[in-house]
Length: 144
Image (cartoon, rainbow, N blue to C red):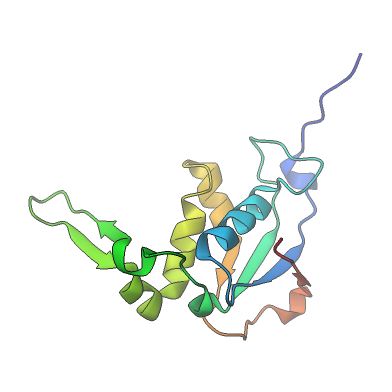
């Protein structure tokens, strides 16, 4: 009889990866990062266990949006109060808060529960080339 392998959260070995988002589409980078954060790149992937790795995204201010998304796509926030809808064009969002735009894109691709929130804590996003995680010896993660 074949037994199904279930990963143990205490026995998961985590690695650190660094991703350069310069000149690459925001959504393509976010989907690869979300996959690594979930642990889908590992053979011992288990859906109900956080077995993913840490990911550092650098140069997120140089990520691009294809087509007309810079002018047509909106970041929308709502309040429970009537008339409190706030919309921001992605051109303004990428100019001022590109690290938030990357985090928001990755967050939407993770599970929408406590496991997804736990996975999102392993993401570090920086606007420039520099990051402060050199002591972890991150490996470069190539995007296809």
